Length: 206
Image (cartoon, rainbow, N blue to C red):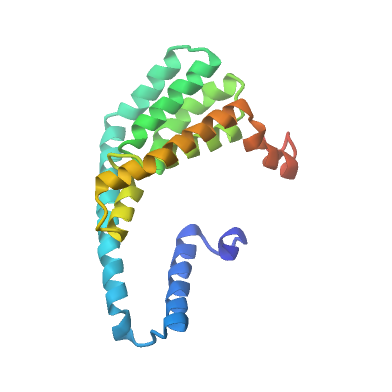
């Protein structure tokens, strides 16, 4: 965390550093110093990473197809063209993000929809920092709800004795809490904007 927020490493580099420190911790705590003792750990890591990379790769391929066919962009343009009221526009956009989150990773959703939806939201008077936090919460909810919730498969791989159905039922309350957070942030925007305003000032934060 110090390397990441101190600006010494990128998120990818920080992940590599975390993995290295985890190996050091295993060596110190459990006395695993020999390479052959690490074989089961490395083998399990490769299996899990391969499974996740296949999921991510297919979701990126799917997002490329949707982008190439302009499906996501067309949906976003259609919502903007409806000329809805301020809060209906926000609700429609968040609903679109929820639906896209069923199939696409957060980065793909941002790249395909942000250039289209941000100008009308700004024109409607919404704080874009505030909206960015709302959108992030909704997209992160997509990581734990089916059918392509990446974290569902991570949990399934960590706990293979638990069925995927049980895992999905277990995460439903957390999805509900995330949408409750969205409602609270809409009712009390200072939850999202209070800290940036305090640190950078209300004008600078915008």
